[in-house]
Length: 191
Image (cartoon, rainbow, N blue to C red):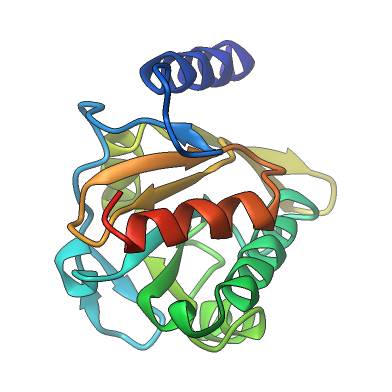
């Protein structure tokens, strides 16, 4: 079921982006979801999208114990920031945990900035996490592992907002940092 939902989300995003876009990533300008969030950053500060007005925001949902997608995506976003050079000051990465049970502020504050000191980890309780995930059409589910442990299956991909706070692009997992930097520069130039 989760696979079907992921395929549906990606197809709807791709179809929304058709039509001569200058962007290399999926242009999802005008979709009717992903408007805002209300979470707390790893420093304890309440955050909404309005806090980052004037910056391009990359929003990614994941969890610290993720063995593959999350660290790879954060590393790609860190490379993107390096490619942006001076424009990186107008680029904000936000990592939203889908595992608030384990991803405490202390854990997030060690993990997320290890990729780039400007990156912020966001968290909320289970209800706030579910609300934000629903707003962005993210699916996630805990699966038990031996030894009282668990993993979390979750949607992957990065939502990118323009400096005006409008959701503009979707970077599928594995998007090249060069493509992300290209499109972020276009957004910063008013595209």
